[in-house]
Length: 138
Image 1 (cartoon, rainbow, N blue to C red):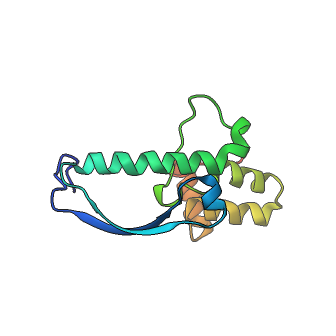
Image 2: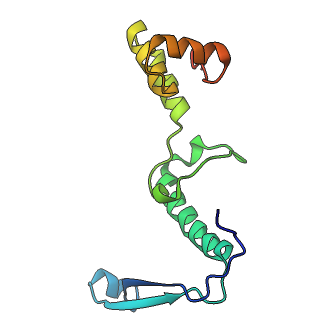
């Protein structure tokens, strides 16, 4: 396990990027490529992750802005940093919607996919023990 207080002194990452003087220059494709070596000296793992999360939050906001009204104030989401620029999908809601319009065999397949069960018996055990969520009433 990595300690969040661990120093990143001596850690650097090479990253190439382009930049333009202004929006008009960018539109005209007038830019310069910079080959940067980013030094993390003086930062901790937590500092580095905070910077990454800030950028991921901005990417998430841009990707989900069209769906603004579907989110609730104070809503808690798990955002996968690697996919932060993609639209947020509520897997349970998506499964429930798919489930509600499916026939009995398709419903069984959906429940098995959602729970990870590989047999009907395993699915029944999961549902009886409460390890899996039954989406029937969602």
